[in-house]
Image (cartoon, rainbow, N blue to C red; front, side, top):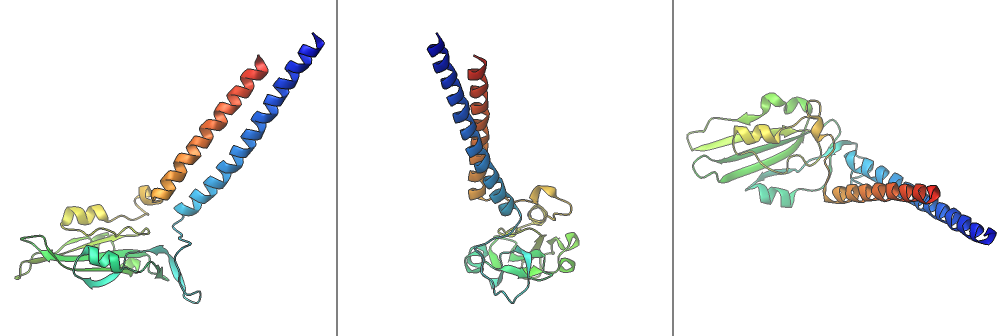
Length: 201
């Protein structure tokens, strides 16, 4: 009986140590994941190259000058942070009213005073049948699409001061990381419950 009790205690203690070890591992993994996710949400992009002597803002916009359409603009756009004090992404889309065909697309990093909610919208069609729409937003990569009417100009325009929902933009790698973190949390919870059950029994 004493040997049987000793073996039982050994198994229980071993299970407890094993569960504790798993918990520690997953806690470390969870901490690292959250730190990485925090960096992704901060708007910084470690893969973007920029001269160290050039001061930049904490925002990256799609930028191009007078391209034929949005696809040409985005394919050409360099992946560089905006110059210092240029904290808003401006998109100007000129197109034909009849066929909604793009005439030119210009995307720039601008200062906040150059692209405010008051600048957002569309002009009246000119005698040539062309119209120009402008959108403004102030978080990284927010100007990927172009406005084609007043409704889309307003939809594509967002300012972090009035829209907290865009304070963090999660891209596919970040979404995958979130899933991994949630999985780790679930496994830690199950390990703790299993350990409690074995010790109680």
